[in-house]
Length: 294
Image 1 (spheres, rainbow, N blue to C red):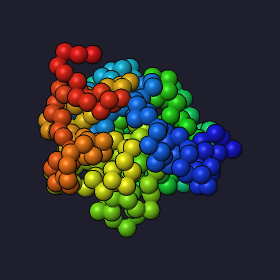
Image 2 (spheres, rainbow, N blue to C red):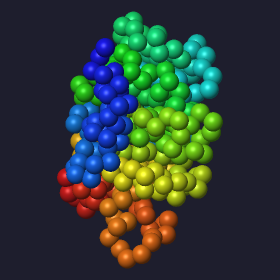
Image 3 (cartoon, rainbow, N blue to C red):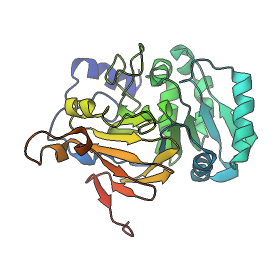
């Protein structure tokens, strides 16, 4: 049994004391908030309806035409490997990737995902991209498997993990909209994401689907989480302890500590603030960085 499997089993019995990067959310107020930072590699979280410019940025972050990219379509309801491979390679070529360097990795079966042969492409990958769909499908297929270890290894050796819509949400440690009965349930029967961005909950299609207030109950229930809501054709790029917004719209930030500083109850719109393209957030302090600062 691998370390992450042991941690998952440990979580089921002692959920309040496990470090949240790979398991359940801790409610301990003494745990420092700076655990949201990413120790190595780069994350790209896109809010859906992702355009060519954002995909080109992902390819550039991965290393350009020479980058080995693994595309994971498992969140989608139906996946035909042959047609998906042809489509992704064609579109990848348009944004600077080399078609021959793109591998499509997909299964619905954890036993398959837990094999050396399935996870092998991740050993040399420079980047991984998770498609949109339903995020719980990614959990059902890859949680506790060698494939998930492989995703982590890409990030840990300095690579890039990106995803759009469900592919962004899965990167958080708390999985919002993870209920198999419908995506309107914010805290459903799947609540553990892959945790690439520790101590976070990530929502998508924010303004396009009027979801600005949807993360608030999640943050109220789990006040140590950093809530991040990303609009369409917009992305949050995370490296180290800095998040940068790119694209055409906005990213909303939800920080429970701000809600307790005033007098009386706050309206929904007072429980988040927006970042626009070019804006940056210090993930340790959860404060916007002034222009020109590092």
